[in-house]
Length: 290
View 1 (cartoon, rainbow, N blue to C red):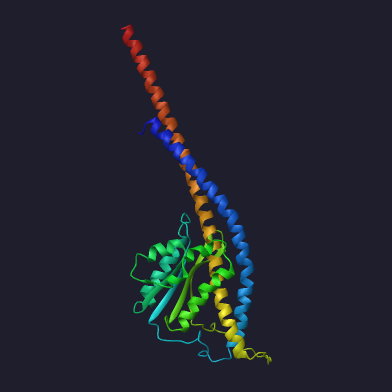
View 2: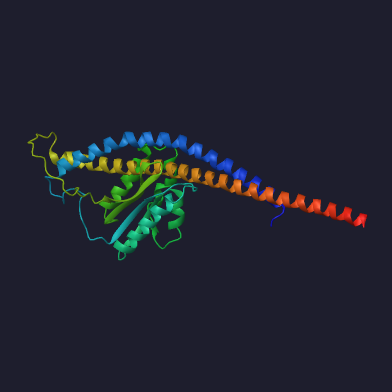
């Protein structure tokens, strides 16, 4: 059985940890509210933009446009969005596992490159045999610091240019989609080439487009791709804080339960020590009488 001093030290340590996890939970809850508002406001715009693009492109040849060309998949770029910090449960590992599983199951014969947005994903992929893409972009981890559409757009433009130039035949986006504070859905979205959604049908209405339908699509596709990447970052940012809040809530509860058990152990050890001292005193008194 550990000594009273060891138990007291452990109680102090667990109590300090509980205070830290509780504070982190409250900070993540405050940040989650802002991030949730941002993604909630962004989704309707992104969905409507996608609907307009589908409505226009459904009647066009899917091979038209530099971003719609389908090629044999020999070179694949994985855009993996994770967080810069840990202590958020399985948030980062779920995205990384999804990407690794896709490589194994779907792109085993392709040349793989990666663009890691988020320190945790970058740390993992730097240990692999895959090639890092776009070193001229600098530190993409800074996108999460005051994240805006203007900061995200150059990254999307660089990816689009590389696809148009034939550097990659396919680009896939991996991130956690925010559902609620406790649930994040790991997504693997095809970013390029642009493919019409299954079941999309051409509009039956006879619209007159100005400018021409093809020109509208050429303008909407780049805008839609930039919006798709920005939405992925917002989703991931909200999911990170939701996952961290949930993880810290569980850690705080676990610390509370551990403290309860430690205090019981401490009281038992203290009672045992007191009982032993009483027995020694009684034994000594009896010896003096004899």
